[in-house]
Length: 371
Ligand code: SF4
Ligand code: SF4
Image (cartoon, rainbow, N blue to C red; front, side):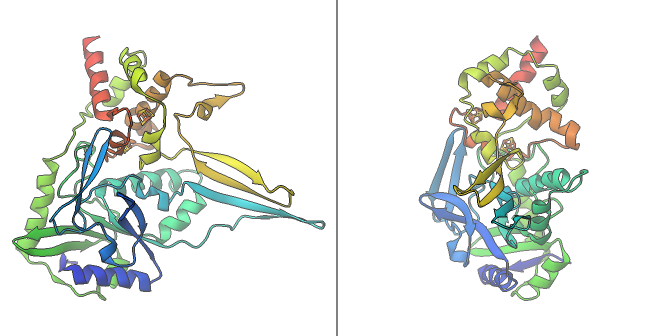
């Protein structure tokens, strides 16, 4: 289908159409001075006029005269939590005098439309697909949510200071996998959206919103904005031979330097859209009549994470940071044929010690060349 153009009435109509189709529409919104992902019922709830300043250990919201709805790039948490929640009840058990029953169908029937996802986060979801859907075992909870989700990406026209998706080939333009990909354009007092559909359901949905075919020059304007964004990345990461360099750098003295700074707080893993480690906890009530098994996000920075028969394998910050960055930029390739990083920059922004994956990888490269 040709690209289409709609204005803010079209955006509101899109939101209503999704609601009528019983999607919970999730998008960015301001809550207590920060931008979070939450349910959106009308476009006025989007963070219109806001931009975000991101640097290492810095996230500042600024209200501006900019009339755009999608001026902020990332929210703190990724969209992954709507497909792979922080807590998932895997089963519940009930016991009474006569019987003991296990109920495995405890997940609610979720149906999300994710509005305003950035291209890098879409790439992160494709990595989850590889892990949870394409291996020997499929993750049922993920599969159920993934099959029903409707994804509206917003191409990036102004990256943040910590973004480096261009280096990871995961942005600033949306790759395959979206239902609708939108570019917001504000030009000479005109404010509109250029969109392309990526699924049959999206083609059906847009029939019910006011739109017109985009003119060639409008499509070109959208493309130029995204091309220009690729030249404005806050960070870059040289990925050439990086996997091999990291594999040769297990004893690199630079890990000692990172260990002096890393607090092993795990923030970088909690905000990362490609991290997927979990632990399992069992709970019972005080009477022992009901119990449940819950899967919850875990972090490789937790001491207990690497606990094996009597002790943890990675007890030092040195070992834990090295393990984390190795997974992102080396071992993930071997496991899943893809890097474990999409260059969203969240781990840089939300690290309280301002540790920067692009700087640390560059330092390791430099040490390995001079060693
Ligand atoms: S790198 Fe930063 S965010 Fe990650 S565990 Fe260390 S201090 Fe925390
Ligand atoms: S490692 Fe950092 S930059 Fe890469 S995807 Fe995770 S949070 Fe984003």
